[in-house]
Image: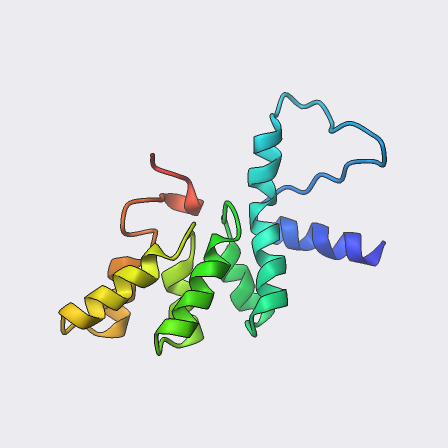
Length: 141
């Protein structure tokens, strides 16, 4: 019971929706497709994976995963911390809304080819800026 309440609170904080299917039961019929439920579970899946696989605080994991459509931000964060010298805070900013490690590849290239600071490169390469997502990680294409 306590675990379910915790998961519901995290889902609420992440702006997602958590639907628990009763044993042997059907999903509630709200006119939503299963893909809508999968997308709504994205932030929660991301948050849970961030808590299991990283040393991020709860607040940092929430920032990383807010609006996520899948666990892409965690994969991106892992690549950022493995391949760069970014602080956790900058890696979180870089990887918010990411669906893959593209922001990290952009960061690495910009670091090699420009004299921009890490902060400016993060601002340049984050998924929110490179045109793949809009507000709250909504896909633009």
